[in-house]
Length: 121
Image: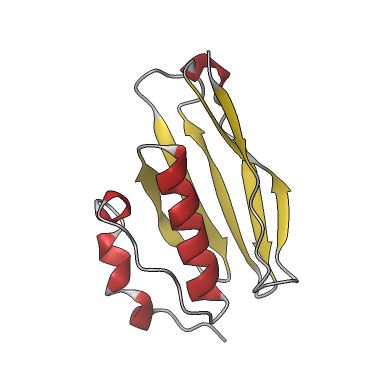
């Protein structure tokens, strides 16, 4: 069995608060719904975890809510989930995000063109 812990940090956003961590495992029964929460200083929270919890056919789910609410985004693996979390943090804190890779662009491609719709005061 392989269990891997991914710590998230955002040096470009020192006031962002990370609670928990994202992890992956060969045994999906070990994967939980509430893995990591990132609280941004603009009143936005990003949650990520495995849904449904422990399900073999589940996926990582990233939710953005608070001052900005976005539809949940699925990620096939932890690397893609981390890429999406970092993308959302950068976009929502006024930083220039890393471009999404093809792996991270499947369901999230829609967000590339939708940011103009959100007023981030």
